[in-house]
Picture 1: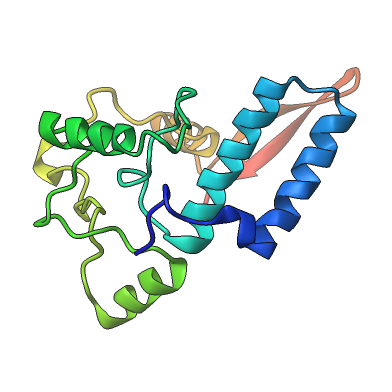
Picture 2: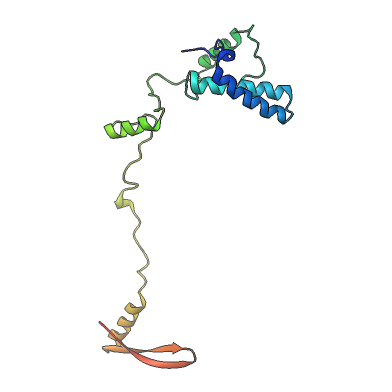
Length: 176
């Protein structure tokens, strides 16, 4: 695995081509030299992490705060040692790494393997015996109300008023 501090970005043609497009865009926008330097450093970190040594977010080097002097190679080592000793962002070897690609996840699902880093959600949300019971009786449909009214009166059919514009007519309703 290559080290970020020792990687020769100047001899990498692909990086140089991408950096040239970034720098030309920034020079057109009249950016300050500090902004250009920060963009170059960001481009180096991105290119290194994406194409040279892909890492997880926990393993990626932290963005520097302006101490990019190659004469101080120990500053990066000291920073990673302090992070490791403090226990921040350190993944335990017992915890499996999350798959890097969608294809790996699909293959694991096809093989029936458990995907690391995924929390299992139970198939039942709650115990059916704990569900609330209805307290209010079910509301009757209009035809059920009409049927109950007919049964109370003892009729096979009831009449209801049919409103049509300004006229009222009585239409018999046959019960099934």
